[in-house]
Length: 222
Image (tube, rainbow, N blue to C red; front, top):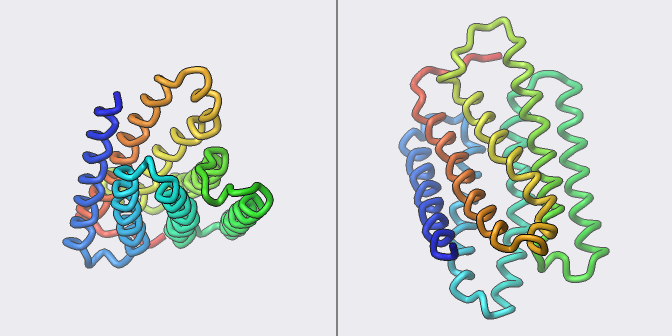
């Protein structure tokens, strides 16, 4: 299972790299700039994670890896929120998104300040909260676009494709993060399968990014 996880990680990294190349090939998609930045950040983070995997027995390397992961979570929600915020038109939905973002920032700062050494450790519950906060704005956007009078081809609309990819990955990830500790204690072997599945689902997210960049039909202004 460990070998399968490593192979899947490398495949996932290759998919991220492919998405990065695709985003630059279709660099004229200025409306997807935040997604390109997210792809770049994810590629850098995964490269760093790979380096630290080879030094996993060194505690200092583990600390650095967890710090990078925690910082990446802040960048991740910020970039995805920016993507969704600029496409959601409802004023109340936008206010909720801002509140969610500030709440997540505050939760992270308080959690890292109160719980000793938490900034240097993996905190699955915190990532579960992040997933929930990302999923909800996705429903906001989907609700708006489905209730729009404008003719939109959902199969080739980049915004809709990306939003569905985000919704798919983070909605599946949330339960696994919230049950992480219980699974580790009750079924360590299943936890490895969960990690394997997470890498596969993460790759699917980046396939949606590639699909969105390749779409030739221009976005409709809403």
